[in-house]
Amino acid sequence: MNRGKREYQHPLLIRLTHWINFIALAIMITSGLRIYNASPLWNFSIPGILTLGGWLAGARMWHFFGMWLFAVNGAVWVLYNVLSRHGRHTTLFRVQDASGLKPMIQYYCRIRREHPPTGKYNPLQKLAYSSIPLAGLGSVLTGMSLYWPVQFGPLASLFGGYDTARIWHFLFTAGLVFFFAGHMLMVIIAGWSNFVSIITGWKSAEH
Amino acid sequence: MADDAGNGKRGEGAAGSGLTRRSVLKLSPLLLLAGCDMTPEGRTESFLRSFQKFNDWFQSKVFDRSRLSTEYSAAELTPEEGFRVNSKDDDVPDVDPAAWTLAVEGLVERPGTYALATIASLPKRVMNTRHCCVEGWSIIPRWGGTPLGEFLRMVGADPGAKYVSVECADDYTTSYDMPSALHRQTLLCYEAYDKPLTLPHGAPVRIVIPTKLGYKSAKWVRKLTVTNENTGGYWEDQGYDWFAGI
Image 1 (spheres, each protein chain N blue to C red):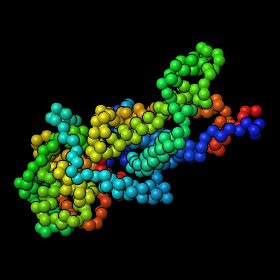
Image 2: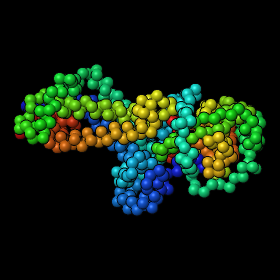
Image 3: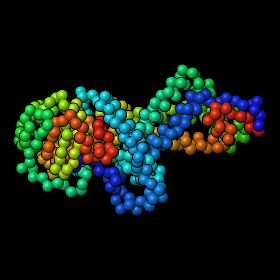
Image 4: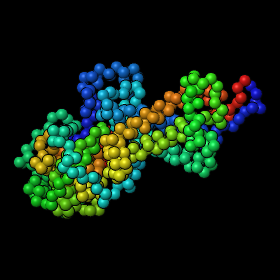
């Protein structure tokens, strides 16, 4: 391994918020699935093993603890990104990135042989990393419409009313889970030293 | 009695879906596979319960007494066939609407028992408001009754008191913060869909409080106590949030 090629990838605050977000989302999704089971929207229930809280009241206790963790942590992350301009040139998807989407898809579908030239993150990654905070925001806003349909009535009507907001709440969650699956795949493909970098901040060059 | 928190440990999820209690029971070996049911216990539970108290406090700060729950048009009402019954027990208590009276105790100038006719002689409010069950479903029934605040003024309740506790004929209990009890849409409800309440829906008088989750809308009310002590409630003592504002 060449120590001289170590590269600083992730600032401390990004690593910290990343892992707090991981814990918060684990709490929110598993307890949320238990709440879902109390009155399923669709014709299926979630196996108990994937849920947290044991019963509806226990799941609600977890969910309304986890919501603070998720929202406050998310706000800190956004604030940090805005103030430090972190990610502005690496992960933020811009209009000019749109033309790079097609070659990347072709590459992933093995239609194209060579990896198109990109920056630190390719346009598809940028799109994913830039849209996922929007899904997080959507989860928070639809969640508030369900938690406070009276106090924040106009917010619920923004999502088509109380019952429709519930469907949106699940769709945003599904988006987060879908991202997580893709994220895991990419982490496995990128290898160990990349994974270490989200813990220590440093990525060592592959040997 | 109270609507809605009925799902807990007894056949959760059975309501409103194609699932019967039996099919839920068939899945129970899955819970054994999990080794435990993940119900918060010990330190986790006491931590989560204190956090829940923080949320109750936060909710009481967010609560705006002048903000009304949306009142819907007749066209948006849930049809009467869809007016769901949900209670802590499956059977209704033995209540004789004709002989019923409401007992009032605690920090009031005129404690005693009050007949339905006395309650109905006070100003009436009819409203189509959404009833949100803690389970996730909701309905929009047409309610009619006397604002609880009007009744509390009539009996001379101390407006500085902190809580109003409710006891019901099926031994259900719950309690409210005074600002929520005095909210204009909090009703001593004796009508639904312009007809006297039916027994399964809490006849002769129930609470309807559209600014809170359904389990706060207690049915078959028989006693109100104005007090400075938070007496909790049937579901609240088991782990559901006390303020339950929405």
